[in-house]
Image (cartoon, rainbow, N blue to C red; front, side):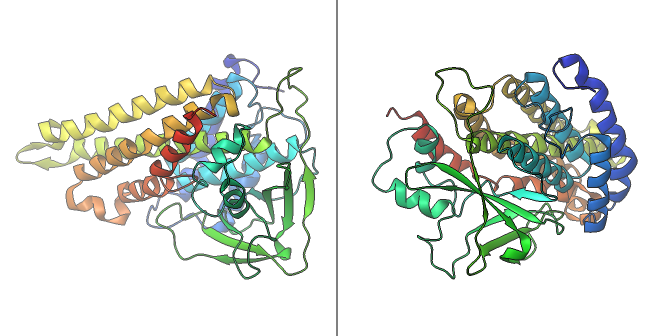
Length: 389
């Protein structure tokens, strides 16, 4: 069995992912004006598990986010998500969620629960600078305790009628894994079964239709299964134990960038294809300098994003690298969205019609920009991160 311990193992696995996307996902996503039906997403999930792309077991193998402790494992996860996102970003985010939950449960030494989602983002933004100071293990400011109590689930601090948080998931999720903090800043994870929660699916999102947004709160009198963090087995002697949340938060940021890369690549490919066949002013669009400039920007931004992600894959997960990851994402999404919009402009008015496919890529990218920190929120987080204690 492959373990992704070496870079040479990546390419054959990525070829399998590509075949899976072309053979199974592409036919289901060929109508961009329609979302992939939940039943088909469930079938794709089962097939991805059979393929080994998802690994719902206690032992890491060669699946998505299985070997985040080695460079090859991180490279595979980033490149695999980009490939899937070229076909459908919603399905890519869904597969990332499942893999992230498997990683979390594995690190918590917990029994695997089917269709689990991890609620990475708290109630509001990124808790200003409070979350940055918490993850760095610095002394908290006066307002930080209250801010973090509101950001993470804290029933004692929140009103009973308040929604505890939001997350994105397909319709078939069954379990919700939620981070929380004790008064002494000890991390504790709560695992809720869906039947123990009051949930409401929010109205249609701007993009990523396959993974609608949900808000949740525990039913009165319900207690979650509590999972305490253990020190990682591979932690070096004398090193400060990092919270699992830091690794998951880091991985969420990298995954969003990888999915954005796949979207820009697909938007660029659609624009290039259209410019090669559409005739305007007696010549194909691809011969017009203005269109060449638009296409060039799409290619340049996609290439720059791929290089940035390749560099991030070299960095280990967690606190040591989180500043670089946040800085990269804070400055990446605006150019990515602008580049996708440039590709839409190649189509002229047709670009705004849903059945061309380019419109959906622009919406999905704009939606990704809002997840787990908008660029302004990421910059506020980064400012606190870089500030001396």
